[in-house]
Image (tube, helix red, strand yellow):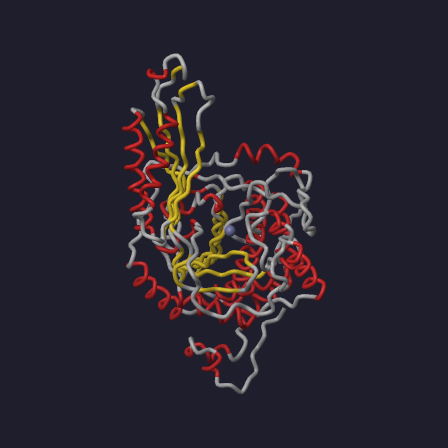
Length: 507
Ligand SMILES: [Zn+2]
């Protein structure tokens, strides 16, 4: 829908109290944004064809081959320079259009989740492919919205001779926090001036301040000596005992950790059968906290506990880095600019049928029956949650904003199959259109307003220096490109039958 131009007798300073400098500009439509909005309206079908196609690919992290191929074909045909396979990950995707500075990047992801297969449009449990993976967080929509917004910005750059570059980063395996620290290490953001992190939600919103938790994920393996459990157990060194002692040891530590910490573990190898003393034991840990230095402090204690467990059992041990994520540092200056575009574009106009579907769905899911949101989230800071997202690393090396678009039903939680009911619905499609418009307009602001970029950078210099960034990735670590491969290969033949076989072309 067209941007809403606010006609009012109120002083503009009241409408835009946080950005009085820009208030004058907002009074008349910006032709560059108008052009971008027209491009998006004209290409809405192409955008949702991308998102819908990605839904049916339903690819797990590091296995996003069909998804990135479609994005590569679409964006190459649209005039973007596309790099696939950088930073040692075959499905790592980076695309650019334009030249030189400023360079503004969209950072997002397109991976699905194991067990998430579900027939869209029905909230009865009905997988498309039994036990198969699927988009139960709606990351498929990120592919369409990011590509659409970048293409609309490209058209504005070309028509209005805007200097600079628009880039898109689709990082692999967000659900396993497995790629962004490698992208940062690979120098992808060195010449980027600002990034906007894009995610689906049930709301049109931005925010600022620390978002999410720091996380460190590592797999500990103990090595012992096997023996008969009855005949000569005294000859054995029990590696699973070491796993248990590590777990107990950490439980003793819990009382002495700061209340913000989180730590959880799963035993990934616990022996073969009771009468065989196991020579291998394995335990996988997540340690989290509100800041990375705090998480690291707990993690260092965990390493000592592993050492102690090995000492007590006469075993040896090793540890393998699995993943890590810094909390996201969301930039306020950029959020203010995004909010102005949110307020100008506004929420989609839902039909009564869409509202009714949402209410019926909420009722069936035993959630508050509130329907779809009719207004954007008011501007403000957002509370830090204990979940993690590896794009956090990016926000400590370049000013970063967060932006979410309204393509799902309030109350329907992600990471369960119910969230796979609506990602290809008209609710999702309409949310994607406003999402692409706000995103494109915000990138145009960042490309054309040196004052905004300067303000974002100045804030970043102060905030990021409070906790200087360090990488958790060991120097010799490589991304785990085998991640999810077996699981994906198992289901792909059945899933392939459902592919939409579209070849969207922007115009
Ligand atoms: Zn996500």
